[in-house]
Amino acid sequence: MMISEKLQTKVTKQCDVLVCGGGFAGISAALASARQGKKTILLEKQFILGGLGTAGLVTIYLPLCDGIGHQVSFGIAEELFRLAISMGAEDRYPENWLDCNDTSKRTEKNKRFEVRYNPQLFALLAEQLLVKEGVEILYGSYAVAVTKNVNKIESVIIENKSGRQAIVTKSVVDATGDGDITYYAEAPTEVFKQGNVLAAWYYFLNGMGYDLNMLGVADIPDEQKKESNQVETLVSNRFTGLDGDELSYMTRLSHQSVLNDILKRRQKDKTLIPTSIATIPQIRMTRKILGEYVLHDSEMHKHFEDSIGMISDWRKRGPVYEIPFSALYSKKIKNLITAGRCISVTDSMWDISRVIPSCAVTGQAAGTAAALTDDFALLDVKELQKILINAGVVLHESRGAKE
Ligand SMILES: Cc1cc2nc3c(=O)[nH]c(=O)nc-3n(C[C@H](O)[C@H](O)[C@H](O)COP(=O)(O)OP(=O)(O)OC[C@H]3O[C@@H](n4cnc5c(N)ncnc54)[C@H](O)[C@@H]3O)c2cc1C
Image (tube, rainbow, N blue to C red; front, side, top):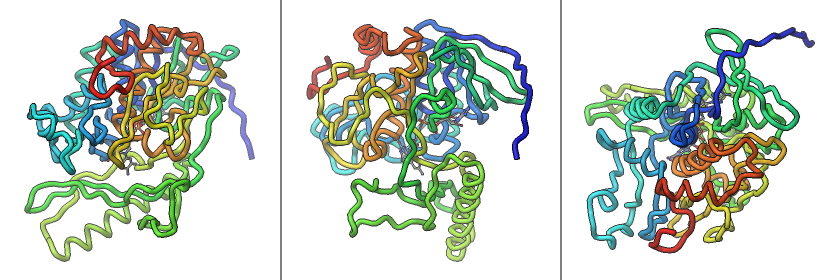
């Protein structure tokens, strides 16, 4: 059965750049855009910034380095890393990177340029920073549709406590993690075919202090899976992350896994209590744009003329990827660009590009580009690269020297 609604939607706001989604990608994009002097609105459906990196309790800022002694991700990726631990780190503090001038120590086993931070502190500090830089943050606001004028987004329709309304914008950064805006605008998208395993990360307190329990490990992409290397999962179900009913069911299973784990551990330790459970679904890969370029995990150490920054492989030491600008947008919708977990990559690359440093790198590039143009295919990439370099980003791999 279908019902039809007649809608007349009031325009409540206008801006130069509308960043949809306030995770690490959206925070970076909004910062970058505001720093170009553009009127920037950051839209977030939760009432906290940080996305999976705060509300999702995924609090390990994975490496800014390649694991063999070279830093590869710079700019806002490093700025947010330092911000996250400016009031203290929780774990994995990389003293060999932050407090030591002896560069030979940067290759030490288990000591990559990564850290565990406190999610609440990061959310509070990121909010302060964004407000200071002039970003308007709109919490509790869900992007539900777009209106288009030929092949440009004219407005993003949102719903919040004030009801349904439209924000008119020159350009849009899709940092929803799920490519929601890309999908609404009917730009080409792809979904994660393999489906996600269940995760149930939670914080707990006991006599030893508080800690993070990481229930449900990352999966191995189908393309790399070997018979002998199957992942041990909490449940056998797989999840797309794109269906309302499925997400509710998945959340209940995740809660059940947390509770079972607590009950089991309390048999030995009666003092243990949970202090935080995730308030957004802990799902890794859902939907991404099919952009002008699709980056593959075999393209490590490849020089891209239109590189907007570099990332490493959090799972192994050595590989470095330059991210081409053309992996952030599709020509189908001229003023839409993606950042974070929904950029254009193959399924096997997705597991590498979805993590926090990479979301911050692509966020900075997308936000800067959105401040420069409302037609990404026509943007002079050299101009974008110049601004990124001035902001501290290193674009190409050259083993030590900044280009
Ligand atoms: C279980 C698990 C473990 C992980 N482990 C690690 C790890 O150890 N280290 C690491 O670096 N990465 C890890 N990751 C990956 C990493 O956390 C995320 O991929 C990354 O934080 C994504 O950032 P993002 O900004 O692209 O998206 P998200 O963090 O998903 O942010 C998107 C934001 O957009 C908002 N949003 C979504 N849709 C809409 C809409 N329609 N309207 C308005 N707002 C919207 C959401 O509320 C959210 O705040 C893990 C992920 C999972 C699920």
